[in-house]
Image (tube, rainbow, N blue to C red):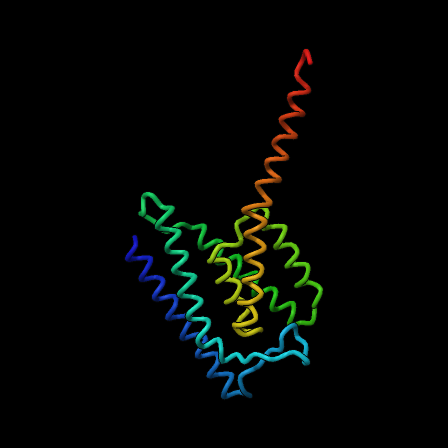
Length: 190
């Protein structure tokens, strides 16, 4: 299993590297490589998409390493690839693409609602995992480059981790204690 996961990580990183370099080459020969201003404000510094040529392959390799490490640590049988990783990646990829499409079409309020919905979802689903960050960044690369989605995604991952790992257990504990007390008070003879 370890060799297969390593090999797939290598292939995926290679595909991502070829894809980002192809996109940058196409941009270069068709009007130039775009630059993106922080917070879409012309007064703030801009970041060139050329940074994606280095950042996206490194980010992909690092996040795939984290996924591989988690799979090998958690999978006792080590016989098959966990499908939850594919679900997390695919869902985040589609989320990133949809967010980019709404932003590009000028529906600037929809991405804000999507991000708020993501934070609510983070209470129920572990969207802080590496495959989710990778999917989100790849889904947003065409529209925003690599640097901005990586920064925004990293902040979202930190918030989602706090919500899922710390806030969620408190809510579950309080809810369970409340339900336990409610069921205890309804017993006959009390």
